[in-house]
Image 1 (cartoon, rainbow, N blue to C red):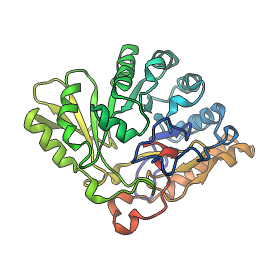
Image 2 (cartoon, rainbow, N blue to C red; image 1 turned 180 degrees about the vertical axis):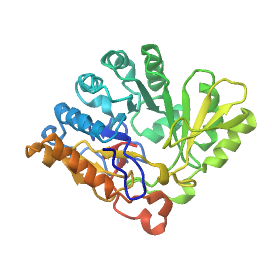
Image 3 (spheres, rainbow, N blue to C red; image 1 turned 90 degrees about the vertical axis):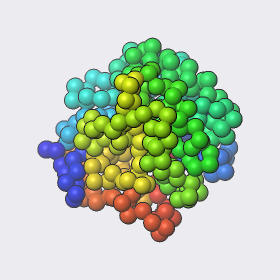
Length: 335
């Protein structure tokens, strides 16, 4: 059975956060004022174990999940993450096993991840300017470390690599052309993401959003582009290829052109809460079910019941009222 929600959207993608910890303090995700030295992160026994994660993934494939993305926090901070990758890689129904990372420690992990069975990685890199990048990540990690990680991932075969750039007006919007040019012809796909009101600690304002249309216009003026169709139903990025055939970029326009109508993603937090939207105000406790001795059929029934009741379309309804809602923080469920 492949359940559909109240808006006829199938469950196809499962994003699994494996830790709430991160070594970055990006302003739009984990601002240091909130996630400081005294912040209480989840204890080890509160995290889903690798066995529990694998079990959920296997059950989810019975319901139509074919793509799994490991997220955080920063997933490479989870000890022995390559063991989890190896377990998930044995699930035959999974067509695409991926990971989103900030890339800061990817250089020393890439080959082990590839050997374990990871298909590819998405790396976050918001600027090529060290001063801007370190101001955005508030961690002291420079651009070189992330570029080294991207190179290591390419060498290990974790391709095609996607590079996520969150664009904030007045901060890094002047770099979109230079970032596009830097990765043009490499085979890597840069995806420019509109700054979103995820969680409720990043001080989001609509005035800070650099619209996707302007990003494309700026790049097209110097590196001519042509729009191309989505690779698959529910793809979040609008694709544009370079007219000279040297690759492509994408834009994710959750604010100016919402894509709620085609969203096929569920999100599992590190402590086992299931969310049906990136902007959710509440989740469903799957960990309790797993640890109370539920059978696989009961887990499948739980997942199905949550999905068929799903009615989320936050980005289509975004307003000054919704922005202030107590939404789950992105560091708990990934981007």
